[in-house]
Image (cartoon, rainbow, N blue to C red; front, side):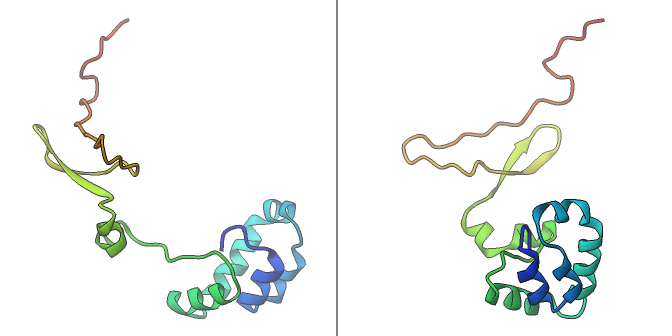
Length: 123
């Protein structure tokens, strides 16, 4: 729903109160009120139902996932978003991989140094 025109959002959420906001500045000035009105309307249906309604109205939207849901998401797995590295101090560590892939020069990863490791303390 981010950056949706207020008239389209009011129509999609069946919330006439949102219709009084007209421009980008209104979105900034009345952000908290707009959020309250939208949150109230969104409680009336499930996430799946709202996604269908909003997509039919050509409003950009998507489900917000928890971290475990992101890790288990089939598309995230297919794209190999996460990779596992071995740390001497922490064992296996899961990190977000580089989204850019090159066929001739694969990305390499290394564990970041511990806090204050490889630094010089100066007073």
